[in-house]
Amino acid sequence: MESIETFIEGMPKAELHVHIEGTLEPELKFELAKRNSISLPYATVEEMRGAYDFDDLPSFLKIYYEGMSVLITEQDFYDLTYAYLEKAHAQNVLYAEIFFDPQAHTVRGVSYDTVIKGIRRAQLDARKNLNVDTRLIMCFLRDMSAESAMKTLELSLPYKDWIIGVGLDSDEAGNPPLKFAEVFKKAREEGYLLTMHCDVDQNNSVQHIWQTLNDIGVDRIDHGVNSLEDEALCAEIIKRKLALTVCPISNGYVTDSMKTPEIKKMLDKGMRVTVNSDDPAYFVGYMTENIVKTQQEANLSKNEVIQLTRNAFDGSWLPQAEKDKLHEKLTAYAG
Image 1 (cartoon, one colour):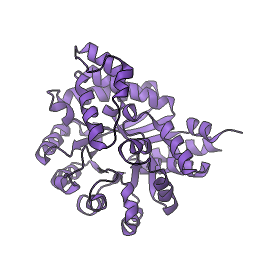
Image 2 (cartoon, rainbow, N blue to C red; image 1 turned 90 degrees about the vertical axis):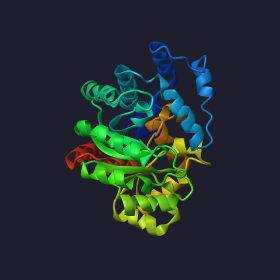
Image 3 (tube, helix red, strand yellow; image 1 turned 60 degrees about the vertical axis):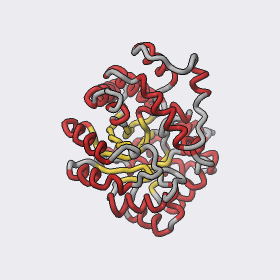
């Protein structure tokens, strides 16, 4: 009889919460550093991995932004993106919506054009070579100014056909959703779909999630685990059929647990919860590992695992006909 782990490994999947910069594996980081004549503060891959000792969001972000220094050229962004898509393909991820953080590069003197053209070329090659379909979500860094976010939004407009939506990430402390209300209003007017990170166990987490609903009008919520603290909030999320993109292994690094019981509770409530990898090069786990960990820790049934994946298909920003095709593949696989 097939094990649940083997079933998960072969299962068709969709990923809705992955930061392309967070897929930069140490081996590629060394390769790009050598290519671009950049000195890294680590002598070996093992030493670099040993520095990935995070206990909260700020400690992770420090290493995360430090690692981006090796990304300079269009080819660097191509290599980064294609490496992730090869990994996704190996784990039967058929579709992914990928975050990218242009401000983290433009502040270093790397042009917006360089970033998005490298990523886009890899997306097209992966679609052709690997049959992995992807869409891009441009994130604003919430610990930078709203003015900087608005400027970045304007830089994106020539590439609107390449970007499906906008998001908000980085350090949430002191940077509520309301800070970016005008930017997201403008993004909506430009035709972008909207999502925002509501990181786990932050100050004012529940208040911030309410802001994303009532003041921003998001189409999805990234993380959002603390919504469980407010029954009225859960009911509103269910009413709006909003997907929540939870990242268990990531949670285990930056909070007190992977929050897998919370994922089970969301499933029981009928919330559209999904499981994702977030920054898998730093949190050591791609899609398969995250779903396996969730199943094991929350003791999920096979049907509940399937429901997590169906939630990802339904919560994606694909046209309905494309969602239906993914559902058909999952149904055929599950038997």
